[in-house]
Image 1 (cartoon, rainbow, N blue to C red):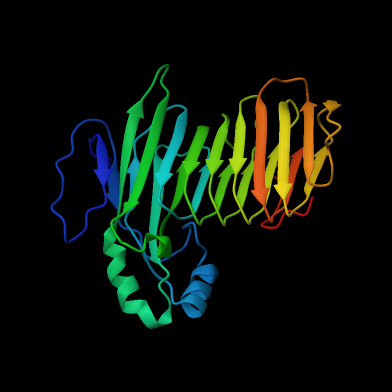
Image 2 (tube, rainbow, N blue to C red):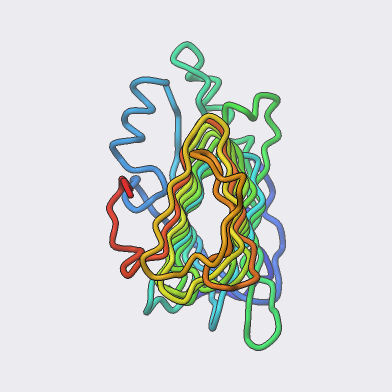
Length: 287
């Protein structure tokens, strides 16, 4: 499928009049089922059986990008997965809308799926750099029961900024800085590219994992309330540490760089590592 030329794309509900879109590039292709979406088929089955969740896979969005791509997501809620996949010719976005009103309100949950909306924009930058911006909103009075999950893949992933709620955020193989704020969802940033740009990861009641390779630096400030902080630096030198460090706090200069690495959570653990194979981990990270 060839992308069509537009400046932005909005989810087109059957209850809404399609907007007229001009400029730049993107297209839609239908995607059925839950394979390769942010929530696995097993997890979605569990959510449906245990919580009465109603969900729908929206058409795949293909944004024609070239060169480094920064990702900027502003959402009222939901999970976000962003990853670099070498060889891709475009940026691919897979959205899933879901509502958790409970078993006795499944009809209301189903109806509320139409109250969620999102807009995708392609913003040109300097030096052949582009930003894919996604804004997700809900017009429902009980938006805390709702969310839009996004899985985003692009060939050359630069920086990532995510603001969401009640959802995990996973970023894989970014080349630029990461700024993430969420709640009740794990944050995971793992990359094979040396990190010398700011990293800010904030959540609550969830764990945070940050893993980078040799050459990564930072002024680390890691703090958990109700959890523990673990650090493993086999490929970086810890230049100095703070006397305030304890099992739930780690403040140190790692690798001599000036970029901040700030991580915060409550009732969850923080794990950071600068190691030889940072992405060589499975779904569960123990170190």
